[in-house]
Length: 200
Image (cartoon, rainbow, N blue to C red; front, side, top):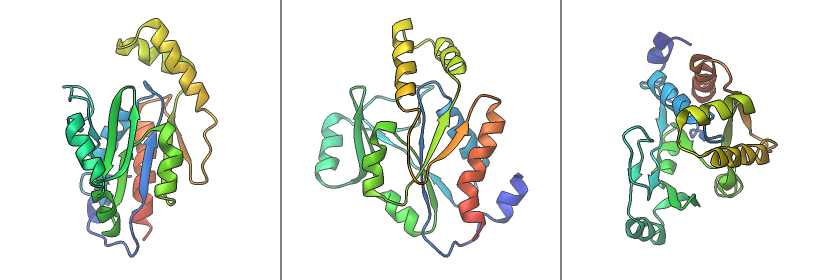
């Protein structure tokens, strides 16, 4: 899909609400890299990449999220400001109600989700489209080792967790295998996020 095609169709007005894409995958699978690739390719398209609200302080090379203290997070949670919210590894995560406004404007919305929260996210938004990023255990282990964040034990725990979610089921599930180049898997993701709008 060329940049020229995206620019030519960027101002098209969909006749229906947008789709919510829930991108998930095990740690080390390359999910953040693929999301960044898709964000660059779809910069002029009617596709919004939602920022997550997280109680984890930002990192220079980490996700470009919106940091909230636990007090701020809980205040917003109690006041109904979040569409989705969950906890993982000691941190709290959320997506704001602005997601619904974007969807009603006919924009596709892409969010970085959690595999363990998929059932609840589907309950809250039945039309959700999960996009599962996968990779072979060999590649997953090598990427985790190169990343250097976890101990050997921690890496094996993440591999085990990946196995536990390998048979994830959902009626709208789309799977992308990220065992080759970022361009190959990234172009698949771009096509999935764009085709829902481009076919209008």
